[in-house]
Image (cartoon, rainbow, N blue to C red; front, side, top):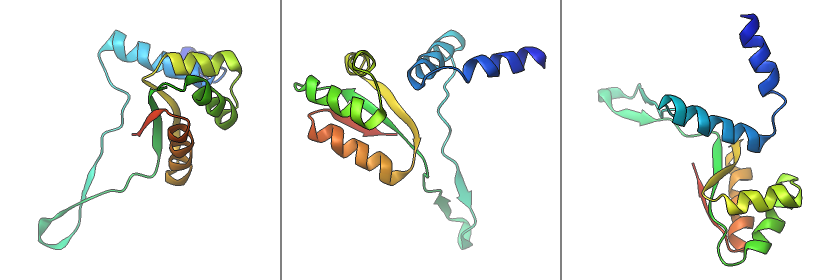
Length: 123
């Protein structure tokens, strides 16, 4: 248990971008996926399945597009990144740039990035 606590302590010091890279490395090393499965709830009469509505979203930058400088500016402003971090994210597309956002915030970030010329997907 002490080893796990040390690992959790170290992970809590990482930035969002470092966490994203860590997750990708773990997925590749162990052949697993960190994506949460979408569960369907059975409760409607007649045995109909009712899908649960997603409450959190990940914003994935698919492509920075032809206006990369404008996209970098939006990333810096919206996510509080430095210039080098924002450029790194734009260059690394496709990449998850923000995880666990509510629907309204995710849509707002997506709209800002698309207005700057990026291709964005909510997951």
